[in-house]
Amino acid sequence: MATEEKTGEQTPLDDVMEDIRRELVLRVAKADRDDHRDIYDALEHE
Image 1 (tube, rainbow, N blue to C red):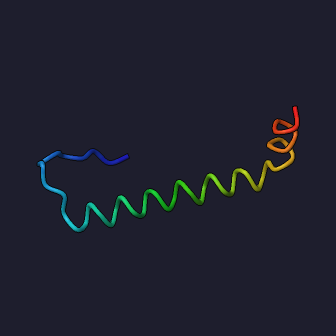
Image 2 (image 1 turned 180 degrees about the vertical axis):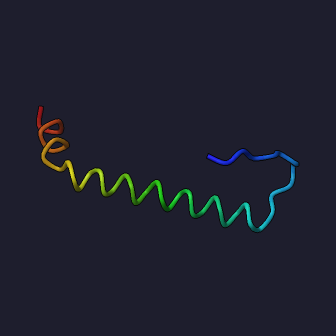
């Protein structure tokens, strides 16, 4: 992962990158749940 230099200022690019990271995390989490639905369902019904 790229290193970030903290300057104390949030730029518009920082805001966009944060939104992209959040969206990627949500998509990966959803894909994982979909791929392993049977495991999640079994754990839910334990």
